[in-house]
Image 1 (cartoon, rainbow over the protein chains, first blue to last red):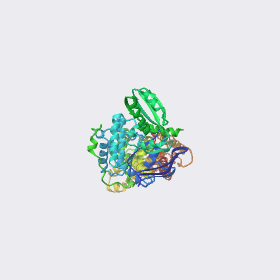
Image 2: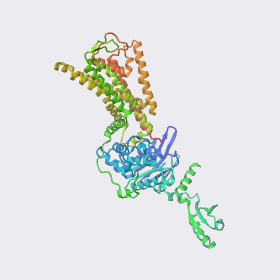
Image 3: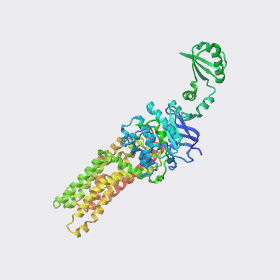
Image 4: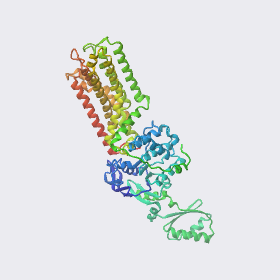
Length: 308
Length: 301
């Protein structure tokens, strides 16, 4: 059974479109939900959390409607984007209440809260009020509230927003650990490298529609009408360009400060010819990279398509 | 804050092993949280509790130490009674004021502040239905208000029964406890449900508080004044909550008036007005919370 099954799912806020005609099956693992602000990520996450009912189509989590079936929400852990809730409580109190609201009995909830707080590396601050927490600590506390009742499915809406780089690495590590423990995780972000650090499985959403889903590299292959870019940093960029300029698969060559950026429609052929040219002309290559292996490039292409 | 990076790997992930409570018990969690949250700061609940304690002490003191002194209840138009019997009916209005204070610091902001802060998402992303939420909030508020407007009068009436001159008088005074319980329960429900209804009308806590304060202090007082001026026999004046509660108290404690008082509220009018307030408030809060939950309100940044 799919963890999430959305079938032509749409959501309107009055006349404003939140999500449009989304059909999506999620089997497990970590999936990154990518899109710019206002793309519909939070709407889709709220529908999966049972906070919103689809205006049209169906969306089920573990085979049940999360909006109608309160029972299935016990299996869902949701960390919303905002965080200004009950700041006067300590981390322990907040997570305990959340665990109890999710069905953990009163006698077990404090232990479950302590465990969740420990999972997020917040034990030292467990009895401090949330009011005095830094952004990173608030994000960790929010994640602890989401996992305290041991859900099978985690929905994390922008969990790394505003977190400093050191805390980000730590939180990413902890989210990965939760996935290793068998939890299905959907994590949203508009910052591409955050998702890249967590997973290569992505769903790109733009203007309420799913533009692409799957492995980021497979998605890249699908966009064959976009030239693949290869950046070569070398000592003789003009010599290298002169060899490749005549090739029909090369769409464009851009000179950069320390080399050239080649745009090609046939990456395999291009790499072969690059190697041959380097050997023939005695070019010293200091760096060879493809910006297209970066999630950012894929996202740029896809949302660029959406805008056209 | 966080331990060493490897710590989590040593800790591992331990699954929760144990039972889970059914969703129908969530209202208890919400009620309990409401009470513990109110108890957190001095100004939110403890200040009103202090006022209620002072009211209880003063009323008890009057009953004990000035019991034979006579007083006239209700602007000199009631039958003159000794303080030992008139102190409690007169003190009801003090407890109502303390109840109003709690409604300002907690009750009238409950739903609005949950919507405003985004707490709705925390509730409804878990196995909580709107009915559980409303029931939990109402029970929590009732428990808090009961400490103010129920417990205080009950202590005083217990004292009144306790200082009876003879066993016969003691037995005669026992219904006093039941009457006080009825007044306390009605006042508790009114001061819990009505502000809760106002808190659901607007999505901004301050606006909801202002609306409730305006209704209670200005509109209620206006209705009371209008009742005095009109020939409605007190039905319009019964819209004013504290006067309706006091009218009920006067009736139950058998305070008879010499003449038709200005804005003398008949007990039927007081009961109908208070019941209508409570029913309407609960209907409003249920409707508004259901609507807000369906719309996904409170989940925004």
